[in-house]
Every structure is written in C-alpha cells, then in structure tokens.
Length: 156
View 1: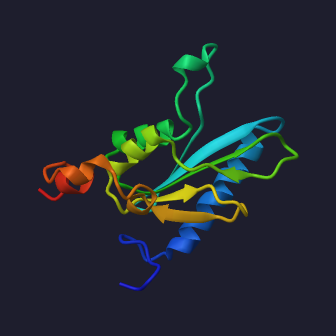
View 2: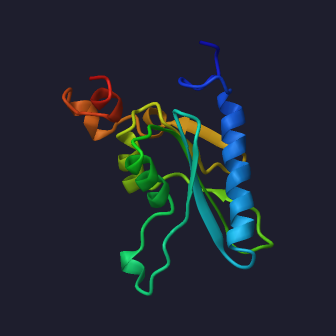
C-alpha cells in the first residue's frame, strides 16, 4: 500500500479530504445561501460521500449534531465510514471553519475503528485530518479487549 492512500481506495487521502471540503462548502452555499450554514460530509470505504445537516427544532435541547444524518445513512446502508468532516460558517461573508467532532460524535465514529480520519480545528484554519486514535489516545475502550467494532462484526 502506498503512503497517503486510503485503506480501501486507490484515491490518496489528501484528494478525498479536499473533495470532502469542496462538497461541504458547495452544499452550504446551496442549502444556506444567506446567514449561518453548516454541513457534515462522510466518506465511506466503498467511495461514497454522505452529506448531512443539523435538524432545525424549536427547542435546541432536542437538536442533533450535524454529523448525525450522515452516520444514520451509513448505518442504514451498512457502510463503513473512513473519514468525517464538519464545516460551518457564521454567515455568507465569513470564512469556513472546520469543527473537530464533539465527544458524542467521536464515540459514534469510533465504532468504525480508531483509524477513521476526522477533520479538526486548527489555528491557521488549514484543512487538517487526524485519526481518531490520535485525537483521543486515552480513550476508555483501551481498557477493554472485547469491544466490538464495525470491522470486527463484518469480518465474520
């Protein structure tokens, strides 16, 4: 396997990650032409890009993370997520910001393996992805050797 290649793809990870960012910003411009906008893009081991937005509710206590819709799609079609990216902007004049997955989303993504690559917030606003095990090296699952992950379930 070549360095910088996605495990299940012939496309270099940098190309996948840039494509995810491009899809996210293009989607935001169409879905949210004015004001705030945010979307998540996930890439799957079979080469699909899944896009989701946060649901809008009257009561913010019942809202869900932007990534939730794409995770539900992956689950519905039994797809393995390999990359996740969340992008927002304050308004149509603002620069785009990459948001590191919150703790809940990190838990949801971890089911697909510690090698899932996630977009992270960095000071210079550069597009940067890291593996989940780099983002959270002291995760509680390290205390157990019988945690079932997506890759384990699908090896049977």
